[in-house]
Length: 204
Image (cartoon, rainbow, N blue to C red; front, side, top):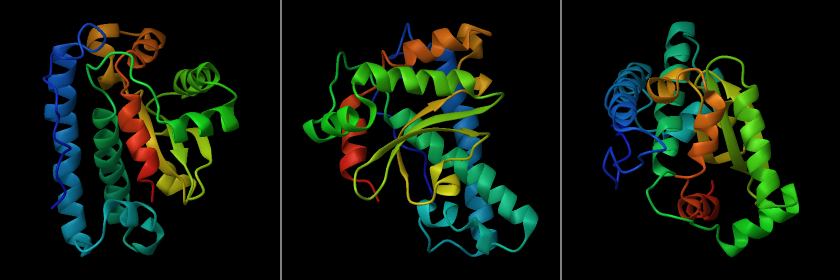
């Protein structure tokens, strides 16, 4: 049984960057629905013995098109939102670990360049989707975007997402309306680089 990530902060803790109503709606309704629907699809597909990563990286093995689509959309929604909510926190001025900082400098030149790249991907995603920072088994970093609830497990193969920026309208519209750029900029004010570093160290 897959479960939503447990938040270690209150719904109002990310104010003023992400408002309480958005958090309540996003986590309590959208993410909860993806989780429920994913569990139902997993049970129907007989994949309860698989991890979410294994399921998402082998969707082509599911022959039933409707079931495969349910696993992709809801499994992606489940995984992506677990990642998104877990890398945010009310902590101030967190920093990446030495290992992640070295990888950022190697693959992007600087932290500022990485943030600029991720912001451009998030703003450049037409319609609903995500921007991701991912790492491969050797620790190389990749910045990508994906439509809908897709993620690098589906599209890039062996890249493990360590940071995800949700640019579906439900992530920001209650507070920011059509100003996606303001939301994306403020996301980095609540991004917990310590958690991102932990994800980097624990990549698959």
